[in-house]
Length: 341
Ligand code: TYM
Image (cartoon, rainbow, N blue to C red; front, side, top):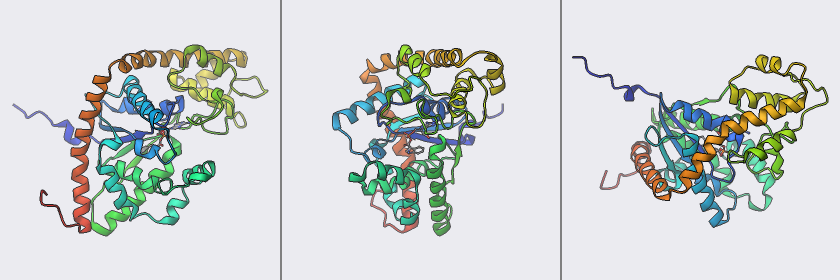
């Protein structure tokens, strides 16, 4: 009899995380979460709620707690499956903060200061340009490198942080020998940058003050329809993908993600029709796609015990995997090991 093949050992490792900083948007879903779910069958997937990252912006404690709970339930509702993947809350796993400190010491001030997100957030919160805002990328690098991740499914806005993660890993490996896997980004062809419905030159963001600019995964169908009907387009009144048509391009991208249609198929479908029909079709397709997620979310939110059990088990598994990498890195640097090691 032939031995069963241990596929587990050959599977690539996927790591990704999302901040529980408020409403999870259609941008988060199409840019990242949808891929997280799809990758679970063929890879070793490890997913986290990056709550340590969230406190780089001041949080109201009860709201922060609620957002984290809701985000955990929502990700389960989106299809993150704790039987297939490790799914935990970052602050429950102390190795992240530990390796982050170490990686701070292998990151250059200049390279951190050049990060677009640092510059944007510093400009947006001039009264709270804290050190965590600057050292956010080494914490993100720690998240990824602790699990020796091969691939990191993210939207385009995280590309720069991912490149810095690679730089930090290569720098460390260059000094001490092979310690960390150098990860690649996994950025979807469609949906990698979903834009605001009100200003399609800016990305759709959780923190947008204009409620009509973004779709929350948990929005009610009537709100989704209303927001799409108000979406900014152009005066050409022709559904086609092209330069200077940011609003229409964005709507086509969203429609393509939720229906699986190509741009050519979408152009043919709406040939001779106006933007009114097109926007209604996009709204309906999105509302239908998100409906089962909303229903499952309501069920998970009623079952706090189950949620706690999931994040407890997730943290245990994550601790066990990540401790190995942390010990390895610390040994290489020359830390004297504690008695138990
Ligand atoms: P966050 O919480 O801002 O976003 C979560 C994921 O959603 C993607 N995304 C988008 N994709 C397409 N269009 C958009 N408009 C859009 N907005 C957001 C993001 O690219 C991301 O993939 N720093 C990260 C969280 C993090 C992380 C990590 C990610 C912490 N540690 C390690 C990967 C690996 C963040 O703030 O994502």
